[in-house]
Picture 1 (cartoon, rainbow, N blue to C red):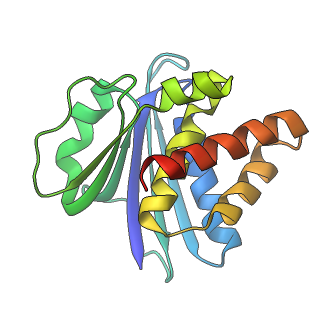
Picture 2: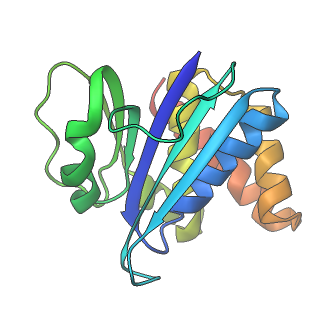
Length: 177
């Protein structure tokens, strides 16, 4: 198994956190992971994307033009990266910010109102965790517990924040059932 995932969005949306959490969870699960961040010149509000490769075997090439999965947190990222998704691939779209869905019939596309759900939960900053939940539910590449353990390690151990992240992860998983 090898899966290449591109995550794109604005700085401040947790793009890099998604990539890091997937990589940490995969490594803890005994898989190999490679994380390649790409930043625009601005930090918050500028463009950001990363590519994460998860594999059961050694990872040969650090990057690829084509990916198996695209996680698009905003419309510019969706437009910029939709053509890089391999036929048969998967796209997760944050429909809270993406109003124009891609028109490809050779991939699976899932709309997730991540920002709206995060607001309902009570913390706008967990929208990226909602998307991770949707991704792990559809891909089955990592378990909920593996990802939650990575969240605990990376994002700290404050009980109230951990509970918000747990709820966000679950909500994301439920959205794509």
